[in-house]
Image 1: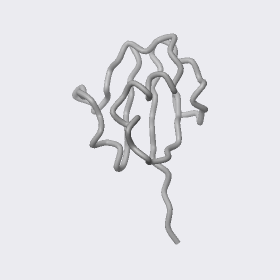
Image 2: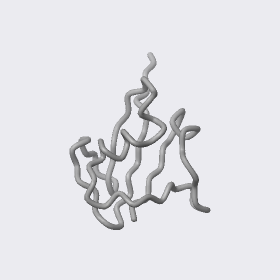
Image 3: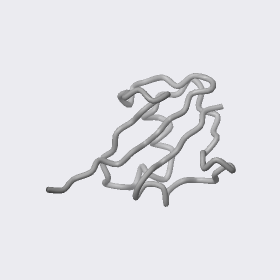
Image 4: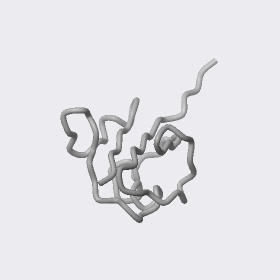
Length: 78
C-alpha cells in the first residue's frame, strides 16, 4: 500500500481519505506519473512538486510498499 496526500488547492481533489488524511492505494510498482494520471488531479492545470518519503522525486519514480507520496502545488507571488 502507498499513502498519498495532496496539499493546498489539490486537497479538494483527494479521493477517499483515512483518519490521518491519506488516500491509501495499491500503487506498488507503478510510477508516480501512472498513479497521478489515474487520480482526480490529472484534469487540473496546476503544476506541483512531488515528494516520496520526504525526498523530492520526478514522475518516473517507481513506488514501493509503504511509500508516502506527497503532492504540493507550486506557489507563485511577489
